Length: 322
Image 1: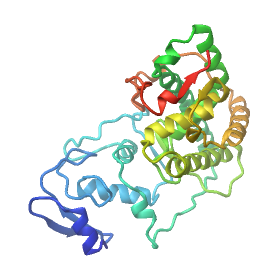
Image 2: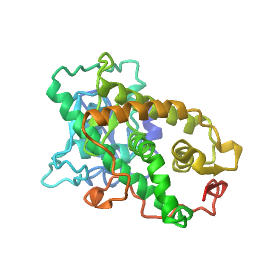
Image 3: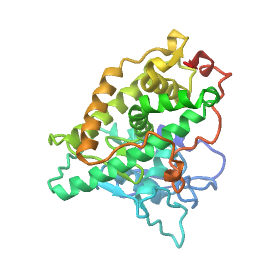
Image 4: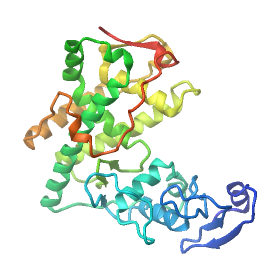
């Protein structure tokens, strides 16, 4: 149960407040009229760091505790509406995805001494095959989003077509993996693909599981670097963009500020790429290595509609090698 001081800090707003307990013993407090950031109904709590209704808060807490091994989008696209109609939200994946995008804080749950993470095992080979196909399809989407991200740098767009193609060919595998890392930065003990969250136990040695574990570990290293190694005045997006350029483009981008050169993950990422390419070959899959944005027209996983402000720090400390 939340302490009185936590409760007071949580609800230090003007207006009347009413409290109620839920089945987990958490206190949810009725706030002055606000909309739930997940479903649009009246918000009654900010127990997890953003204003939600009680139903969405309970939903988030339940799924952080991993009562389900995998949550899949009902439309497969990963962009279902989470606005409640007739008091029903039909897609658990998109609802949970929106919880993370709204910065609901899983650490409030996972830091509790009572929190125990289960270790689900997946035995059925058909399930492994389905996950593997979903994963490789997701990586193809991530490849195209990587190209869109590159195009958000005005100086990249000014390169010759030959040079842009050369960069895409050299970097598309690393780019796809780092897009998946970006997609999964704010989730806990799982990866967020385009249409499902995937968590797999730690005892299997299947090639697919090794890749999933390694990408999860890379994600955790990236979070640690962003939090502890970059200049503190950078936003998470700015820090990640710089780290992403360093890891993906390597010698094809110059970073002039030594305070932004903190990455020691190149070898780790390269090991992931080698395992990934072997795995995709086994799955009879391959990247396109060309822009094909039609693949992601029906999705809305990343917003790269605005140009990177290259005149501003930290972006003015880098340039693409012509």
